[in-house]
Image (tube, rainbow, N blue to C red):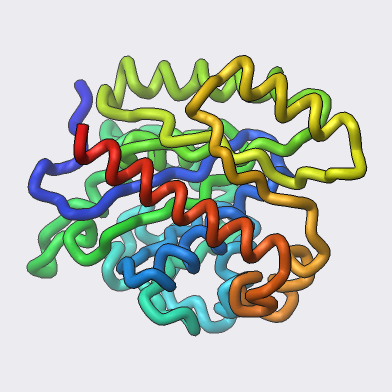
Length: 274
């Protein structure tokens, strides 16, 4: 039976999900989190990808990761104890470790295996649940529809899907939507699709435009108007341990993520008003 997030929680939890790698998922998680923090929101980014790219992209080296999301999922530490400060004011991080690559096998026998992250977020053992400390909790999921990803969707209010403008985009999206529906049916009835973000859009490539048109026809208004362009400065930023918004605020990619955050906040306000 589903046990959704406690109703008194003040945070909005978004899982950044796509089972395919290389679609801009981590880049979206890091830069959307940074943009939300820049407008005064309290943001926690939870890195659930064993590659740890979101952690590295925020300047937290492997040696600096005192505790990780892996340790929280296996019950070694509380989520609060794994939170790190970042160089971005208002943005904090639960970093990842390579141990996440095998965590599914470690938690599969746990009767709460799909609810572990939700339980951690709502644990009031240290006085205040993590969900009450932030306006937004952004979860960077691994590029698979694993038990870790199911945990993220079970704990979340909504799913945000980065979708690369490539030939097989709709095929992968259909599979992901089926998984979201299964999670909604069996684990988290309040889960919704917050939006689909078209990424790596290349204006010089006719295919990008065709894919964008097809996705909008198929999914309608759930697709964000903001499109994230293919941009070299976005690609360079992680090697400097910075979000693109700090590395080059004026580049086209950074400006697109600022617009995406603005559009997301408008959607959130409309949701509350409704």
